[in-house]
Image (tube, rainbow, N blue to C red):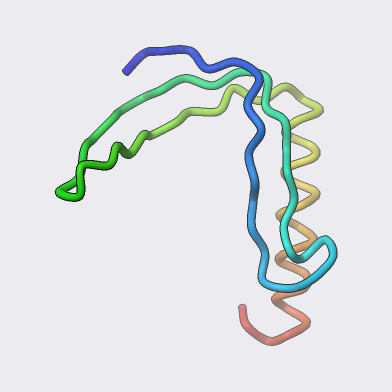
Length: 76
């Protein structure tokens, strides 16, 4: 914990095709907040993203589009 991560590419999955299939987002900076190791010997990390204003806007736009799609389908 406490390690700084730089220049990440994160995939946010979706359920459909096109934009709703998901999107990759570049994040310039993040911090490891916790790390655990499960019974299957795999590590799991809790990450705090330190988003720039542009990164935040991109992520919020994606979330809004996904919410709108789910509302149209009646799944929300």
